[in-house]
Image (cartoon, rainbow, N blue to C red):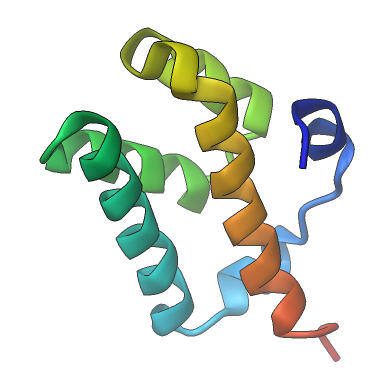
Length: 96
């Protein structure tokens, strides 16, 4: 719910990597909708952000990467984005 909490949260990237394509598709779709709300149609920027997620980019690094474009919306966007990633991971449950 906050940047401090997010930066301290251990994201289970192994669970994310093992998730079905539909899970990653939901995240990509969410990014597209959110960026469209903030900036309009910016497909390359959406792909850039999603690539960062796929490469396990730390939230603080994502902030640095998108700050110039998103300006005052940066922290809220990154908290929401990683919240979505964490939600998708956690609903899959523990890896066995």
